Length: 507
Image (cartoon, rainbow, N blue to C red; front, side, top):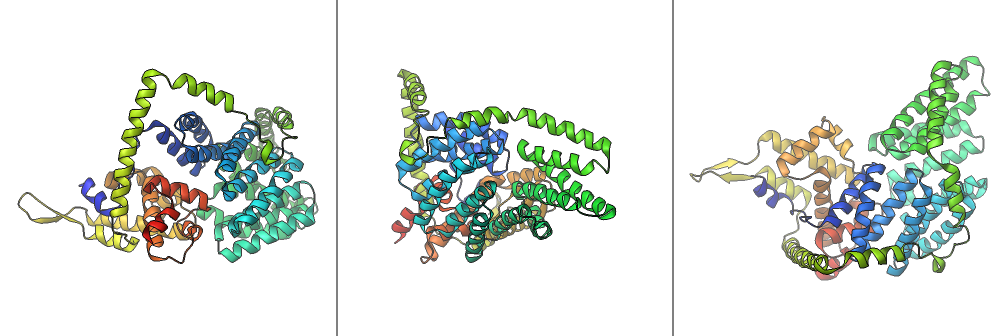
């Protein structure tokens, strides 16, 4: 029953017998669900396997994921090493968008590690590459990072100029999710130049959006920033007004602390605990002391001094042509040890088998007739089979059909809002995430992430087939991807060719 349903609904995903790809995709799923500890553990197992197999695109993507996850976990030394290795691969590829992206990541790591002067150098060069791409989304992202850096350097005029440009570009592109992030960055600047009331009003207008769309990283940061602005405002108010502001700040900090704990984000949790200590000091001194103890424990665990000292070693290394050959000798030694005798034979056999499967799957997928999501929905709504006597019967119950129809409709809405989130999807169907996973898996044999990827790819192929005027970037955005490079890698993993190659073949 499941096989018949899947063959009609969506293409069957690649059977991942290859350990490197299994680990790589698991790392990607953990990263997308903001489980940074798990993403790093799995990603560090995937990385050497991807290097041994010469899978450069996947290696670069894994390095990018690891660098961001380590930065979220405040492990800046490791984050920087991964980001620089990624940038080196990006330069070899010659893709200016990828070069801009990895330079942006390097600069952001320096800023997070309290090294904004070093970060500014990388980000300025990232903007030069972003301008070469001509992509408003990439330029806006880099302007947002530059704004944060200039703000850290107390260059408020420059910071406001960059963020206003980013906001203008996001509005022009109609990217609602990213626009809210830029507004949060602008509100941070407003708070820093003593326009705190205006800052809090801005945060209050965008915090519900982050809650609704499941952008918990931006939500946690905005809660912390809004809470701190409220505390700063309370210092200039009378007793009653001061107490009200402190209570509001406490609510924001508590929500942020819980979110950060769930996301394995110790740095922002530490900020939330400090805010709670300050907000509760006059309201509830006993609770304030508990939060102070939690703050100190987190602070001690981050090893900020050690990270800063290690980063100092990289201060003179700015410049694309001077990126350090950090991991070359280690990779070569591992490769020489690994590729011997029987292991070499096994790897060769595995590659041949995998290539045959990829070729067969690519032929099957590219030979199928493109379908819109509405056509897919109609296909399974009318899905029937025959019993042993040749009499037709429904493969799916009406309840199952209704569940899958609502699931697909909700995913389609999330794609249009550029925010695909499994937790939000389950919530929209009035189910817990675990219940949703079990039921979807029972009906389709797929995980939610695999199911969403299938729908994204079907929509991408339909757009490429029927809307020839759209660029690859425009297709990527309509399919819920933030940038062209991530979409291109996902499309190639699914179909075996890039979107550009697919367009050329179709033409």
